[in-house]
Image (tube, rainbow, N blue to C red; front, side):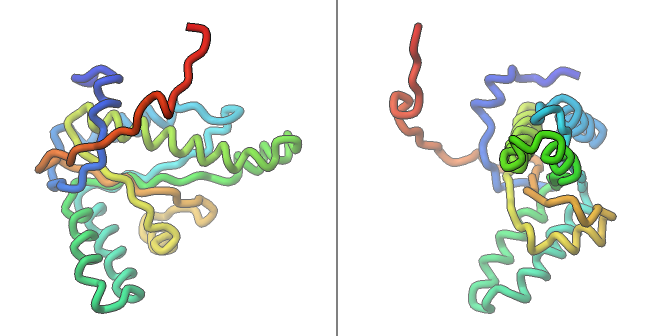
Length: 202
Protein backbone atom coordinates (compact mmCIF):
# COMPACT_ATOMS: atom_id res chain seq x y z
CA UNK A 1 0.00 0.00 0.00
CA UNK A 2 1.61 3.26 -1.12
CA UNK A 3 1.61 6.36 1.03
CA UNK A 4 -0.26 9.35 -0.36
CA UNK A 5 2.76 11.69 -0.19
CA UNK A 6 6.21 11.55 -1.70
CA UNK A 7 9.13 10.91 0.63
CA UNK A 8 10.43 14.49 0.34
CA UNK A 9 6.97 15.92 1.04
CA UNK A 10 6.69 13.76 4.15
CA UNK A 11 10.16 14.88 5.29
CA UNK A 12 9.19 18.52 4.83
CA UNK A 13 5.89 18.14 6.65
CA UNK A 14 7.05 15.94 9.53
CA UNK A 15 6.80 17.92 12.76
CA UNK A 16 6.50 17.37 16.49
CA UNK A 17 2.74 17.31 17.02
CA UNK A 18 1.41 17.32 20.58
CA UNK A 19 -2.30 17.89 20.05
CA UNK A 20 -3.37 14.33 19.28
CA UNK A 21 -6.59 12.36 19.58
CA UNK A 22 -6.99 8.60 20.25
CA UNK A 23 -7.86 7.94 16.62
CA UNK A 24 -6.00 6.72 13.55
CA UNK A 25 -6.77 7.27 9.85
CA UNK A 26 -5.08 3.94 9.06
CA UNK A 27 -5.53 0.42 10.38
CA UNK A 28 -3.51 -1.14 13.17
CA UNK A 29 -2.15 -3.62 10.63
CA UNK A 30 -0.85 -0.74 8.51
CA UNK A 31 0.86 0.81 11.55
CA UNK A 32 2.55 -2.50 12.32
CA UNK A 33 3.51 -2.88 8.65
CA UNK A 34 5.28 0.49 8.75
CA UNK A 35 7.28 -0.51 11.82
CA UNK A 36 8.11 -3.90 10.31
CA UNK A 37 9.33 -2.24 7.12
CA UNK A 38 11.62 0.09 9.07
CA UNK A 39 13.06 -2.75 11.13
CA UNK A 40 13.74 -4.83 8.02
CA UNK A 41 15.00 -2.06 5.76
CA UNK A 42 16.76 0.56 7.91
CA UNK A 43 20.56 0.50 7.67
CA UNK A 44 22.73 -0.48 10.62
CA UNK A 45 26.50 -0.60 11.09
CA UNK A 46 27.89 -3.85 9.66
CA UNK A 47 24.27 -4.99 9.32
CA UNK A 48 24.10 -5.40 13.10
CA UNK A 49 20.28 -5.12 13.13
CA UNK A 50 20.35 -4.11 16.80
CA UNK A 51 17.13 -2.08 16.91
CA UNK A 52 14.08 -3.51 18.68
CA UNK A 53 10.55 -2.09 18.95
CA UNK A 54 7.36 -2.63 20.94
CA UNK A 55 4.11 -1.22 19.52
CA UNK A 56 1.46 -0.23 22.07
CA UNK A 57 -2.01 0.66 20.82
CA UNK A 58 -5.19 1.95 22.45
CA UNK A 59 -5.57 0.56 25.99
CA UNK A 60 -1.99 -0.70 26.13
CA UNK A 61 -0.76 2.73 25.06
CA UNK A 62 -2.91 4.45 27.70
CA UNK A 63 -1.59 2.03 30.33
CA UNK A 64 1.99 3.09 29.55
CA UNK A 65 1.30 6.76 30.20
CA UNK A 66 -0.82 6.11 33.28
CA UNK A 67 2.08 4.13 34.73
CA UNK A 68 4.48 6.90 33.73
CA UNK A 69 2.31 9.43 35.53
CA UNK A 70 2.34 7.32 38.69
CA UNK A 71 6.13 7.05 38.57
CA UNK A 72 6.55 10.79 38.05
CA UNK A 73 4.12 11.69 40.82
CA UNK A 74 6.41 9.99 43.30
CA UNK A 75 9.41 12.14 42.37
CA UNK A 76 8.08 15.45 41.03
CA UNK A 77 7.44 18.18 43.66
CA UNK A 78 3.73 18.51 44.42
CA UNK A 79 3.58 22.13 43.28
CA UNK A 80 5.08 21.20 39.91
CA UNK A 81 3.07 18.04 39.31
CA UNK A 82 -0.09 19.59 37.76
CA UNK A 83 1.84 20.74 34.69
CA UNK A 84 3.58 17.37 34.50
CA UNK A 85 0.25 15.57 34.75
CA UNK A 86 -1.22 17.73 31.99
CA UNK A 87 1.69 16.89 29.72
CA UNK A 88 1.46 13.15 30.39
CA UNK A 89 -2.31 13.19 29.88
CA UNK A 90 -1.67 14.72 26.47
CA UNK A 91 0.45 11.72 25.53
CA UNK A 92 -2.09 9.33 27.02
CA UNK A 93 -4.84 10.88 24.89
CA UNK A 94 -3.06 9.80 21.69
CA UNK A 95 -3.61 6.52 19.81
CA UNK A 96 -0.38 4.65 20.32
CA UNK A 97 3.27 4.61 21.34
CA UNK A 98 6.21 2.84 19.76
CA UNK A 99 8.92 1.97 22.27
CA UNK A 100 12.37 1.96 20.69
CA UNK A 101 15.17 -0.18 22.11
CA UNK A 102 18.69 -1.22 21.22
CA UNK A 103 19.83 -4.78 21.92
CA UNK A 104 23.45 -4.65 23.14
CA UNK A 105 24.18 -8.25 22.12
CA UNK A 106 24.86 -7.54 18.40
CA UNK A 107 26.90 -4.49 19.40
CA UNK A 108 29.03 -6.52 21.81
CA UNK A 109 29.55 -9.22 19.18
CA UNK A 110 30.89 -6.64 16.74
CA UNK A 111 33.15 -5.13 19.41
CA UNK A 112 34.69 -8.55 19.97
CA UNK A 113 34.96 -9.32 16.26
CA UNK A 114 36.37 -5.91 15.29
CA UNK A 115 38.16 -4.47 18.35
CA UNK A 116 39.67 -1.66 16.28
CA UNK A 117 36.19 -0.06 16.17
CA UNK A 118 35.05 -1.19 19.62
CA UNK A 119 34.51 2.35 20.90
CA UNK A 120 32.50 3.30 17.80
CA UNK A 121 29.88 0.54 17.76
CA UNK A 122 27.80 1.91 20.68
CA UNK A 123 27.71 5.30 18.95
CA UNK A 124 26.72 3.73 15.64
CA UNK A 125 24.01 1.79 17.47
CA UNK A 126 22.50 5.11 18.56
CA UNK A 127 22.61 6.26 14.92
CA UNK A 128 20.79 3.10 13.87
CA UNK A 129 18.07 3.67 16.45
CA UNK A 130 17.57 7.26 15.29
CA UNK A 131 17.25 6.16 11.66
CA UNK A 132 14.49 3.69 12.58
CA UNK A 133 12.66 6.33 14.60
CA UNK A 134 12.83 8.87 11.81
CA UNK A 135 11.64 6.44 9.13
CA UNK A 136 8.58 5.47 11.14
CA UNK A 137 7.85 9.04 12.29
CA UNK A 138 7.98 10.29 8.70
CA UNK A 139 5.95 7.35 7.35
CA UNK A 140 3.24 7.90 9.95
CA UNK A 141 3.08 11.57 8.96
CA UNK A 142 2.66 10.55 5.33
CA UNK A 143 -0.34 8.45 6.37
CA UNK A 144 -2.05 11.36 8.15
CA UNK A 145 -0.86 10.75 11.70
CA UNK A 146 0.97 13.21 13.94
CA UNK A 147 3.70 12.20 16.37
CA UNK A 148 6.18 13.42 18.96
CA UNK A 149 9.26 11.78 20.43
CA UNK A 150 9.68 11.39 24.20
CA UNK A 151 12.48 10.18 26.47
CA UNK A 152 11.19 9.09 29.88
CA UNK A 153 13.81 6.37 30.12
CA UNK A 154 15.31 5.17 32.40
CA UNK A 155 12.51 6.08 34.84
CA UNK A 156 10.01 3.76 33.14
CA UNK A 157 12.34 0.97 32.04
CA UNK A 158 11.59 -1.57 34.78
CA UNK A 159 7.83 -1.06 34.54
CA UNK A 160 7.96 -1.61 30.78
CA UNK A 161 10.07 -4.74 31.17
CA UNK A 162 7.60 -6.22 33.64
CA UNK A 163 4.39 -5.18 31.89
CA UNK A 164 5.25 -6.11 28.30
CA UNK A 165 7.78 -8.92 28.76
CA UNK A 166 10.70 -6.91 27.43
CA UNK A 167 14.15 -8.49 27.91
CA UNK A 168 16.03 -6.70 30.68
CA UNK A 169 19.10 -6.30 28.50
CA UNK A 170 17.27 -4.23 25.87
CA UNK A 171 18.09 -0.56 26.33
CA UNK A 172 15.14 1.81 25.98
CA UNK A 173 15.98 4.80 23.80
CA UNK A 174 12.76 6.68 23.03
CA UNK A 175 8.98 6.66 22.97
CA UNK A 176 7.28 7.74 19.73
CA UNK A 177 3.74 8.91 20.59
CA UNK A 178 1.27 9.15 17.71
CA UNK A 179 -2.38 9.83 16.94
CA UNK A 180 -4.68 11.85 14.76
CA UNK A 181 -3.69 15.56 14.85
CA UNK A 182 -6.33 17.89 16.23
CA UNK A 183 -4.41 21.10 15.49
CA UNK A 184 -1.60 22.13 13.20
CA UNK A 185 1.95 22.33 14.50
CA UNK A 186 3.30 25.79 15.22
CA UNK A 187 5.51 27.74 12.86
CA UNK A 188 9.08 26.48 12.57
CA UNK A 189 12.01 28.82 12.14
CA UNK A 190 15.08 27.90 10.11
CA UNK A 191 18.68 28.98 10.40
CA UNK A 192 20.24 30.14 7.11
CA UNK A 193 21.16 27.19 4.90
CA UNK A 194 24.44 28.83 3.93
CA UNK A 195 25.52 28.48 7.58
CA UNK A 196 24.63 24.79 7.63
CA UNK A 197 25.57 23.46 4.19
CA UNK A 198 28.69 23.61 2.02
CA UNK A 199 28.76 22.33 -1.57
CA UNK A 200 31.93 21.84 -3.66
CA UNK A 201 32.37 20.75 -7.26
CA UNK A 202 28.96 21.83 -8.51
